[in-house]
Image 1 (cartoon, rainbow, N blue to C red):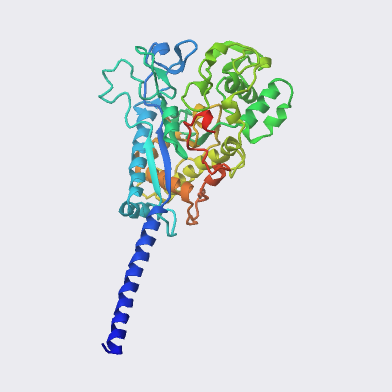
Image 2 (image 1 turned 135 degrees about the vertical axis):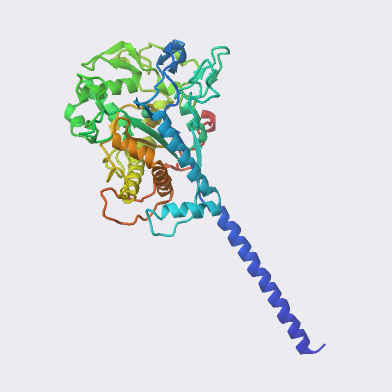
Length: 469
Ligand SMILES: [Zn+2]
Protein backbone atom coordinates (compact mmCIF):
# COMPACT_ATOMS: atom_id res chain seq x y z
CA UNK A 1 0.00 0.00 0.00
CA UNK A 2 1.29 3.42 -0.86
CA UNK A 3 1.64 6.08 1.80
CA UNK A 4 -0.83 8.17 -0.16
CA UNK A 5 -3.41 5.38 0.00
CA UNK A 6 -3.05 5.06 3.81
CA UNK A 7 -3.20 8.82 4.28
CA UNK A 8 -6.38 8.95 2.19
CA UNK A 9 -8.02 6.28 4.31
CA UNK A 10 -6.95 7.80 7.61
CA UNK A 11 -8.37 11.06 6.37
CA UNK A 12 -11.77 9.58 5.58
CA UNK A 13 -11.81 7.63 8.87
CA UNK A 14 -11.16 10.90 10.72
CA UNK A 15 -13.98 12.51 8.75
CA UNK A 16 -16.37 9.71 9.66
CA UNK A 17 -15.36 9.82 13.32
CA UNK A 18 -15.73 13.59 13.50
CA UNK A 19 -19.15 13.42 11.84
CA UNK A 20 -20.12 10.77 14.36
CA UNK A 21 -18.87 12.97 17.23
CA UNK A 22 -20.83 15.96 15.95
CA UNK A 23 -23.98 13.85 15.77
CA UNK A 24 -23.32 12.47 19.23
CA UNK A 25 -22.80 15.89 20.79
CA UNK A 26 -25.86 17.22 18.98
CA UNK A 27 -27.85 14.31 20.36
CA UNK A 28 -26.65 15.00 23.89
CA UNK A 29 -27.27 18.74 23.57
CA UNK A 30 -30.81 18.04 22.37
CA UNK A 31 -31.57 15.51 25.07
CA UNK A 32 -30.04 17.80 27.68
CA UNK A 33 -32.15 20.64 26.30
CA UNK A 34 -35.36 18.64 26.55
CA UNK A 35 -34.51 17.71 30.12
CA UNK A 36 -33.98 21.29 31.23
CA UNK A 37 -37.43 22.53 30.17
CA UNK A 38 -38.78 23.83 33.43
CA UNK A 39 -42.10 22.58 34.71
CA UNK A 40 -44.48 24.36 37.04
CA UNK A 41 -47.54 22.93 38.71
CA UNK A 42 -50.56 25.24 38.73
CA UNK A 43 -54.05 24.74 40.13
CA UNK A 44 -56.91 26.72 38.58
CA UNK A 45 -59.69 27.10 41.12
CA UNK A 46 -63.00 28.45 39.81
CA UNK A 47 -64.86 29.36 43.00
CA UNK A 48 -68.03 27.69 44.32
CA UNK A 49 -69.98 25.18 42.17
CA UNK A 50 -72.46 23.88 44.77
CA UNK A 51 -75.79 25.05 46.15
CA UNK A 52 -77.37 26.23 49.41
CA UNK A 53 -78.99 22.86 50.04
CA UNK A 54 -80.90 22.59 53.35
CA UNK A 55 -80.67 21.71 56.13
CA UNK A 56 -77.14 23.05 56.09
CA UNK A 57 -76.15 20.91 59.07
CA UNK A 58 -76.41 17.92 56.69
CA UNK A 59 -75.56 19.48 53.29
CA UNK A 60 -73.44 22.55 54.02
CA UNK A 61 -69.66 23.07 54.28
CA UNK A 62 -67.07 23.24 57.10
CA UNK A 63 -67.67 19.85 58.65
CA UNK A 64 -66.87 19.93 62.36
CA UNK A 65 -65.68 16.54 63.60
CA UNK A 66 -66.40 17.65 67.18
CA UNK A 67 -70.14 18.26 66.75
CA UNK A 68 -70.55 15.90 63.76
CA UNK A 69 -72.28 18.48 61.58
CA UNK A 70 -71.59 21.17 59.01
CA UNK A 71 -71.09 24.58 60.60
CA UNK A 72 -72.39 26.73 57.74
CA UNK A 73 -74.50 26.71 54.57
CA UNK A 74 -72.62 26.04 51.34
CA UNK A 75 -71.31 29.33 49.92
CA UNK A 76 -72.82 29.25 46.44
CA UNK A 77 -71.31 32.55 45.25
CA UNK A 78 -72.71 35.76 43.82
CA UNK A 79 -75.73 35.94 41.55
CA UNK A 80 -77.83 38.73 40.07
CA UNK A 81 -80.69 38.46 37.58
CA UNK A 82 -79.62 35.61 35.27
CA UNK A 83 -75.93 36.09 36.04
CA UNK A 84 -74.08 33.66 38.28
CA UNK A 85 -70.50 33.79 39.51
CA UNK A 86 -70.36 30.00 39.52
CA UNK A 87 -70.88 29.76 35.75
CA UNK A 88 -68.81 32.74 34.63
CA UNK A 89 -65.68 31.77 36.59
CA UNK A 90 -65.99 28.15 35.42
CA UNK A 91 -66.05 29.20 31.75
CA UNK A 92 -63.00 31.41 32.20
CA UNK A 93 -61.25 28.70 34.25
CA UNK A 94 -61.84 26.07 31.57
CA UNK A 95 -60.40 28.40 28.91
CA UNK A 96 -57.29 29.06 31.01
CA UNK A 97 -56.79 25.32 31.42
CA UNK A 98 -57.01 24.82 27.62
CA UNK A 99 -54.53 27.62 26.95
CA UNK A 100 -52.01 26.35 29.54
CA UNK A 101 -52.35 22.89 27.99
CA UNK A 102 -50.62 24.32 24.89
CA UNK A 103 -47.34 24.48 26.80
CA UNK A 104 -47.22 20.66 26.89
CA UNK A 105 -45.75 20.40 23.38
CA UNK A 106 -43.27 22.46 21.43
CA UNK A 107 -45.86 22.99 18.68
CA UNK A 108 -48.45 24.08 21.22
CA UNK A 109 -45.99 26.46 22.82
CA UNK A 110 -45.53 28.18 19.43
CA UNK A 111 -49.24 29.04 19.60
CA UNK A 112 -48.87 30.12 23.25
CA UNK A 113 -46.08 32.48 22.12
CA UNK A 114 -48.56 34.29 19.86
CA UNK A 115 -50.51 35.12 23.04
CA UNK A 116 -47.33 36.27 24.78
CA UNK A 117 -46.79 38.69 21.86
CA UNK A 118 -49.82 40.71 23.04
CA UNK A 119 -47.67 41.80 25.99
CA UNK A 120 -44.03 41.37 24.98
CA UNK A 121 -41.60 41.57 22.06
CA UNK A 122 -39.02 39.32 23.72
CA UNK A 123 -38.00 35.82 22.81
CA UNK A 124 -39.49 33.52 25.40
CA UNK A 125 -38.25 30.10 26.48
CA UNK A 126 -40.51 27.09 26.48
CA UNK A 127 -41.67 26.12 29.97
CA UNK A 128 -44.38 23.64 30.82
CA UNK A 129 -47.30 24.91 32.88
CA UNK A 130 -49.07 21.80 34.14
CA UNK A 131 -52.51 22.83 35.27
CA UNK A 132 -55.26 21.02 37.08
CA UNK A 133 -58.74 22.25 37.95
CA UNK A 134 -60.56 22.08 41.28
CA UNK A 135 -63.79 21.58 39.34
CA UNK A 136 -64.88 21.29 35.72
CA UNK A 137 -68.64 21.42 36.24
CA UNK A 138 -71.23 22.42 38.85
CA UNK A 139 -74.16 20.93 40.79
CA UNK A 140 -76.34 21.79 37.76
CA UNK A 141 -74.47 19.25 35.67
CA UNK A 142 -76.80 16.43 34.66
CA UNK A 143 -74.62 13.81 36.37
CA UNK A 144 -75.35 15.30 39.77
CA UNK A 145 -78.99 16.25 39.40
CA UNK A 146 -80.21 13.01 40.93
CA UNK A 147 -77.70 12.94 43.76
CA UNK A 148 -78.88 13.44 47.32
CA UNK A 149 -75.81 15.46 48.27
CA UNK A 150 -75.45 18.14 45.58
CA UNK A 151 -72.32 19.65 47.13
CA UNK A 152 -70.21 16.53 47.24
CA UNK A 153 -67.69 17.73 44.65
CA UNK A 154 -67.58 21.39 45.56
CA UNK A 155 -66.87 21.72 49.27
CA UNK A 156 -63.81 23.61 50.49
CA UNK A 157 -63.35 21.35 53.52
CA UNK A 158 -63.19 17.58 54.04
CA UNK A 159 -66.49 15.87 54.82
CA UNK A 160 -67.79 12.44 55.82
CA UNK A 161 -69.70 9.85 53.90
CA UNK A 162 -72.50 9.64 56.48
CA UNK A 163 -73.17 5.98 55.67
CA UNK A 164 -69.61 4.76 56.23
CA UNK A 165 -68.08 7.54 58.32
CA UNK A 166 -65.15 7.67 55.92
CA UNK A 167 -63.77 11.18 55.29
CA UNK A 168 -63.71 12.54 51.74
CA UNK A 169 -61.47 15.24 50.32
CA UNK A 170 -62.65 18.79 49.98
CA UNK A 171 -61.13 21.32 47.63
CA UNK A 172 -58.34 22.51 49.95
CA UNK A 173 -57.05 18.98 50.57
CA UNK A 174 -57.21 18.30 46.82
CA UNK A 175 -55.19 21.43 46.04
CA UNK A 176 -52.52 20.58 48.59
CA UNK A 177 -52.20 17.01 47.29
CA UNK A 178 -51.49 18.41 43.82
CA UNK A 179 -48.43 20.15 45.34
CA UNK A 180 -48.68 23.22 43.09
CA UNK A 181 -46.43 26.26 43.29
CA UNK A 182 -49.31 28.56 42.39
CA UNK A 183 -53.08 28.43 42.89
CA UNK A 184 -55.25 30.84 40.92
CA UNK A 185 -58.71 31.23 42.49
CA UNK A 186 -61.30 32.96 40.33
CA UNK A 187 -64.24 34.83 41.85
CA UNK A 188 -66.81 37.53 41.16
CA UNK A 189 -68.29 39.47 44.07
CA UNK A 190 -71.44 41.42 44.83
CA UNK A 191 -70.40 44.99 45.57
CA UNK A 192 -73.82 46.45 44.74
CA UNK A 193 -72.58 48.52 41.77
CA UNK A 194 -75.19 50.73 40.14
CA UNK A 195 -74.94 51.97 36.55
CA UNK A 196 -74.35 55.62 37.58
CA UNK A 197 -71.60 54.86 40.07
CA UNK A 198 -70.13 51.72 38.62
CA UNK A 199 -66.65 51.06 40.01
CA UNK A 200 -66.85 47.33 39.52
CA UNK A 201 -65.38 44.78 41.91
CA UNK A 202 -61.93 43.87 40.58
CA UNK A 203 -59.35 43.27 43.30
CA UNK A 204 -57.22 40.70 45.08
CA UNK A 205 -58.27 38.79 48.20
CA UNK A 206 -55.69 38.62 50.97
CA UNK A 207 -55.18 37.01 54.33
CA UNK A 208 -52.25 38.34 56.36
CA UNK A 209 -49.85 36.14 58.30
CA UNK A 210 -49.63 35.19 61.97
CA UNK A 211 -47.69 38.45 62.58
CA UNK A 212 -50.65 40.67 61.78
CA UNK A 213 -53.22 38.47 63.53
CA UNK A 214 -50.98 38.39 66.60
CA UNK A 215 -50.79 42.19 66.61
CA UNK A 216 -54.60 42.37 66.46
CA UNK A 217 -54.85 39.87 69.29
CA UNK A 218 -52.49 41.99 71.41
CA UNK A 219 -54.51 45.12 70.63
CA UNK A 220 -57.63 43.31 71.86
CA UNK A 221 -55.74 42.39 75.04
CA UNK A 222 -54.63 46.04 75.46
CA UNK A 223 -51.00 44.98 75.07
CA UNK A 224 -50.53 46.97 71.85
CA UNK A 225 -51.81 50.29 70.50
CA UNK A 226 -54.62 50.36 67.90
CA UNK A 227 -52.50 52.80 65.86
CA UNK A 228 -50.05 50.02 65.09
CA UNK A 229 -52.85 48.45 63.05
CA UNK A 230 -54.60 51.64 61.92
CA UNK A 231 -51.37 53.04 60.44
CA UNK A 232 -50.51 49.78 58.69
CA UNK A 233 -51.44 48.89 55.10
CA UNK A 234 -53.82 46.25 56.50
CA UNK A 235 -56.12 48.89 58.01
CA UNK A 236 -58.55 48.75 55.07
CA UNK A 237 -60.01 45.52 56.51
CA UNK A 238 -63.24 44.00 55.20
CA UNK A 239 -66.38 44.85 57.12
CA UNK A 240 -68.51 41.74 57.55
CA UNK A 241 -70.25 42.85 60.73
CA UNK A 242 -72.03 46.13 60.06
CA UNK A 243 -71.97 48.62 62.89
CA UNK A 244 -68.54 47.39 63.95
CA UNK A 245 -65.49 49.46 63.04
CA UNK A 246 -62.77 48.12 60.74
CA UNK A 247 -60.60 47.51 63.81
CA UNK A 248 -63.42 45.63 65.54
CA UNK A 249 -63.93 43.52 62.41
CA UNK A 250 -60.19 42.86 62.17
CA UNK A 251 -60.01 41.82 65.83
CA UNK A 252 -62.99 39.51 65.30
CA UNK A 253 -61.17 37.90 62.37
CA UNK A 254 -58.06 37.56 64.46
CA UNK A 255 -59.95 35.52 67.10
CA UNK A 256 -61.64 33.47 64.40
CA UNK A 257 -58.15 32.78 63.04
CA UNK A 258 -56.81 31.77 66.45
CA UNK A 259 -59.44 29.76 68.25
CA UNK A 260 -62.43 29.71 65.93
CA UNK A 261 -64.96 31.69 68.00
CA UNK A 262 -66.11 35.22 67.24
CA UNK A 263 -65.43 37.68 70.04
CA UNK A 264 -67.96 40.15 71.40
CA UNK A 265 -67.87 43.66 69.86
CA UNK A 266 -65.42 44.80 72.55
CA UNK A 267 -63.10 42.03 71.35
CA UNK A 268 -62.19 40.82 74.82
CA UNK A 269 -64.50 37.82 75.24
CA UNK A 270 -65.49 34.84 73.09
CA UNK A 271 -69.05 34.71 71.76
CA UNK A 272 -69.69 30.99 72.21
CA UNK A 273 -72.73 31.07 69.90
CA UNK A 274 -70.65 31.97 66.88
CA UNK A 275 -68.13 29.29 65.96
CA UNK A 276 -66.20 29.02 62.67
CA UNK A 277 -64.39 25.78 63.51
CA UNK A 278 -60.81 24.62 63.87
CA UNK A 279 -60.27 25.13 60.17
CA UNK A 280 -56.73 23.78 59.86
CA UNK A 281 -58.04 20.48 61.26
CA UNK A 282 -60.80 20.33 58.64
CA UNK A 283 -58.32 19.50 55.86
CA UNK A 284 -56.06 16.47 55.52
CA UNK A 285 -52.46 17.64 55.51
CA UNK A 286 -49.32 17.27 57.56
CA UNK A 287 -50.09 20.36 59.63
CA UNK A 288 -53.25 18.85 61.08
CA UNK A 289 -53.19 18.04 64.81
CA UNK A 290 -52.62 14.39 65.66
CA UNK A 291 -55.59 12.02 65.94
CA UNK A 292 -57.56 12.45 69.12
CA UNK A 293 -57.18 16.25 69.27
CA UNK A 294 -60.96 16.49 69.67
CA UNK A 295 -60.61 15.11 73.19
CA UNK A 296 -58.72 18.20 74.27
CA UNK A 297 -61.57 20.57 73.38
CA UNK A 298 -62.17 23.35 75.90
CA UNK A 299 -58.92 22.57 77.76
CA UNK A 300 -57.06 25.64 79.05
CA UNK A 301 -53.54 26.36 77.73
CA UNK A 302 -54.24 24.61 74.41
CA UNK A 303 -55.30 25.89 70.96
CA UNK A 304 -58.83 24.76 71.89
CA UNK A 305 -59.29 26.87 75.03
CA UNK A 306 -62.48 28.93 75.05
CA UNK A 307 -61.14 31.86 77.10
CA UNK A 308 -58.94 34.30 75.21
CA UNK A 309 -56.41 34.42 78.04
CA UNK A 310 -56.07 30.63 78.04
CA UNK A 311 -55.56 30.22 74.30
CA UNK A 312 -52.12 28.93 73.24
CA UNK A 313 -50.97 28.81 69.61
CA UNK A 314 -49.10 25.50 69.92
CA UNK A 315 -48.80 22.59 67.49
CA UNK A 316 -47.62 21.87 63.95
CA UNK A 317 -50.00 24.29 62.30
CA UNK A 318 -49.01 27.21 64.50
CA UNK A 319 -45.31 26.49 63.90
CA UNK A 320 -46.08 26.61 60.19
CA UNK A 321 -47.96 29.87 60.59
CA UNK A 322 -44.93 31.51 62.22
CA UNK A 323 -42.51 30.09 59.62
CA UNK A 324 -40.55 32.15 57.12
CA UNK A 325 -42.27 30.80 53.98
CA UNK A 326 -45.69 31.82 55.31
CA UNK A 327 -44.38 35.31 56.10
CA UNK A 328 -42.97 35.53 52.55
CA UNK A 329 -46.30 34.45 51.12
CA UNK A 330 -48.42 36.82 53.17
CA UNK A 331 -46.44 39.86 54.44
CA UNK A 332 -44.29 42.63 52.90
CA UNK A 333 -43.01 41.73 49.40
CA UNK A 334 -43.13 43.48 46.00
CA UNK A 335 -46.49 45.23 46.63
CA UNK A 336 -45.37 46.56 50.04
CA UNK A 337 -47.64 44.20 51.98
CA UNK A 338 -49.47 40.93 51.44
CA UNK A 339 -46.29 39.12 50.30
CA UNK A 340 -46.05 37.02 47.15
CA UNK A 341 -49.79 36.28 47.33
CA UNK A 342 -50.52 39.98 46.82
CA UNK A 343 -47.96 40.27 44.04
CA UNK A 344 -49.23 37.21 42.15
CA UNK A 345 -52.85 38.38 42.34
CA UNK A 346 -52.02 41.95 41.31
CA UNK A 347 -49.84 40.82 38.39
CA UNK A 348 -52.69 38.73 37.04
CA UNK A 349 -55.08 41.69 37.30
CA UNK A 350 -52.53 44.02 35.67
CA UNK A 351 -52.25 41.58 32.74
CA UNK A 352 -56.05 41.52 32.46
CA UNK A 353 -56.21 45.33 32.50
CA UNK A 354 -53.36 45.71 30.00
CA UNK A 355 -55.04 43.25 27.67
CA UNK A 356 -58.57 44.69 27.90
CA UNK A 357 -57.36 48.27 27.51
CA UNK A 358 -55.24 47.53 24.43
CA UNK A 359 -57.79 45.26 22.83
CA UNK A 360 -60.69 47.72 22.69
CA UNK A 361 -62.19 48.61 19.33
CA UNK A 362 -64.83 51.17 18.30
CA UNK A 363 -67.51 48.51 18.21
CA UNK A 364 -67.07 47.76 21.91
CA UNK A 365 -69.75 48.85 24.32
CA UNK A 366 -67.25 50.38 26.76
CA UNK A 367 -63.96 52.22 26.21
CA UNK A 368 -62.14 50.68 29.16
CA UNK A 369 -62.78 48.33 32.10
CA UNK A 370 -63.33 49.35 35.72
CA UNK A 371 -60.16 49.96 37.78
CA UNK A 372 -58.44 47.59 40.22
CA UNK A 373 -59.80 48.34 43.71
CA UNK A 374 -57.94 47.96 47.01
CA UNK A 375 -57.54 44.40 48.27
CA UNK A 376 -60.25 42.57 50.17
CA UNK A 377 -58.66 41.64 53.50
CA UNK A 378 -60.00 39.13 56.00
CA UNK A 379 -59.29 35.69 57.45
CA UNK A 380 -60.11 33.82 54.24
CA UNK A 381 -59.56 30.05 54.31
CA UNK A 382 -57.90 29.52 50.98
CA UNK A 383 -54.87 31.83 51.15
CA UNK A 384 -54.16 30.58 54.68
CA UNK A 385 -54.64 26.86 54.08
CA UNK A 386 -53.22 26.21 50.62
CA UNK A 387 -49.57 25.34 50.70
CA UNK A 388 -48.72 27.37 47.61
CA UNK A 389 -48.66 30.97 46.43
CA UNK A 390 -52.33 31.95 46.40
CA UNK A 391 -53.46 34.36 43.70
CA UNK A 392 -57.03 34.84 44.84
CA UNK A 393 -58.76 37.31 42.57
CA UNK A 394 -62.15 38.95 42.24
CA UNK A 395 -62.63 39.58 38.53
CA UNK A 396 -65.56 41.93 38.92
CA UNK A 397 -68.92 42.76 40.47
CA UNK A 398 -71.89 40.64 39.40
CA UNK A 399 -74.17 43.74 39.48
CA UNK A 400 -71.87 45.87 37.35
CA UNK A 401 -73.06 45.97 33.73
CA UNK A 402 -69.58 46.93 32.63
CA UNK A 403 -67.83 44.11 34.51
CA UNK A 404 -70.44 41.66 33.23
CA UNK A 405 -69.86 42.84 29.65
CA UNK A 406 -66.11 42.23 29.86
CA UNK A 407 -66.44 38.93 31.73
CA UNK A 408 -68.74 37.47 29.09
CA UNK A 409 -67.91 39.25 25.81
CA UNK A 410 -64.13 39.33 26.41
CA UNK A 411 -63.71 36.13 28.33
CA UNK A 412 -61.23 34.66 25.83
CA UNK A 413 -59.07 37.77 26.14
CA UNK A 414 -59.26 37.57 29.94
CA UNK A 415 -58.31 33.87 29.89
CA UNK A 416 -55.34 34.61 27.60
CA UNK A 417 -54.19 37.45 29.88
CA UNK A 418 -54.38 35.23 32.98
CA UNK A 419 -52.51 32.42 31.21
CA UNK A 420 -49.68 34.72 30.09
CA UNK A 421 -49.62 36.22 33.61
CA UNK A 422 -49.05 32.71 34.98
CA UNK A 423 -46.21 32.24 32.49
CA UNK A 424 -44.73 35.57 33.59
CA UNK A 425 -45.00 34.68 37.30
CA UNK A 426 -43.13 31.42 36.64
CA UNK A 427 -40.53 32.62 34.13
CA UNK A 428 -40.56 36.43 34.10
CA UNK A 429 -41.47 38.47 31.01
CA UNK A 430 -40.26 41.75 29.59
CA UNK A 431 -43.45 43.74 29.10
CA UNK A 432 -43.88 46.10 26.14
CA UNK A 433 -44.13 49.58 27.59
CA UNK A 434 -47.22 51.37 26.32
CA UNK A 435 -49.32 54.29 27.52
CA UNK A 436 -51.83 52.53 29.78
CA UNK A 437 -52.61 52.80 33.51
CA UNK A 438 -51.71 49.20 34.41
CA UNK A 439 -48.43 47.67 33.25
CA UNK A 440 -47.44 44.27 34.67
CA UNK A 441 -44.03 44.25 36.35
CA UNK A 442 -43.10 41.00 34.58
CA UNK A 443 -40.95 39.76 37.47
CA UNK A 444 -41.16 36.09 38.28
CA UNK A 445 -41.97 34.85 41.76
CA UNK A 446 -38.72 34.04 43.55
CA UNK A 447 -39.53 30.38 44.09
CA UNK A 448 -35.93 29.80 45.26
CA UNK A 449 -36.82 31.59 48.50
CA UNK A 450 -39.06 28.63 49.29
CA UNK A 451 -36.32 26.00 49.06
CA UNK A 452 -34.91 25.00 52.42
CA UNK A 453 -31.30 24.26 53.26
CA UNK A 454 -31.81 20.59 52.41
CA UNK A 455 -32.84 21.60 48.88
CA UNK A 456 -36.51 20.78 49.44
CA UNK A 457 -39.25 23.02 48.13
CA UNK A 458 -41.78 24.22 50.69
CA UNK A 459 -44.52 23.45 48.20
CA UNK A 460 -43.92 19.71 47.80
CA UNK A 461 -43.70 16.61 49.98
CA UNK A 462 -46.67 17.80 51.92
CA UNK A 463 -47.80 14.32 52.81
CA UNK A 464 -44.54 13.35 54.50
CA UNK A 465 -44.81 12.00 58.02
CA UNK A 466 -43.21 13.80 60.95
CA UNK A 467 -40.71 10.96 61.25
CA UNK A 468 -39.35 11.75 57.76
CA UNK A 469 -38.30 15.25 58.77
ZN1 LIG B 1 -66.81 33.87 45.13
